[in-house]
Amino acid sequence: MKLQTTLGKIFLVSSVKPPSVITLRDGLRSILTVECSIVNELVLQFLRLYNHHHVSSGSIEREERMRLHHDRT
Image (cartoon, rainbow, N blue to C red; front, top):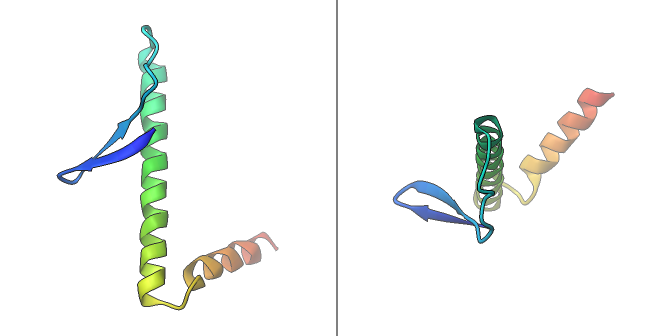
């Protein structure tokens, strides 16, 4: 699978053919899962880009990891 962007829209291009019969619920679940993973990846890419250009390397991700670690204890 690969992401393809066209005029601000994101499409998931897959070489795998979908099953001929799929229920609406399963279809919606798989679409939402794909959309969530696309959004997560875009957010991570944005943070990495922002992090690289505006702050010292790794500080945003490091602060987030430390905050999560502190919340667990």
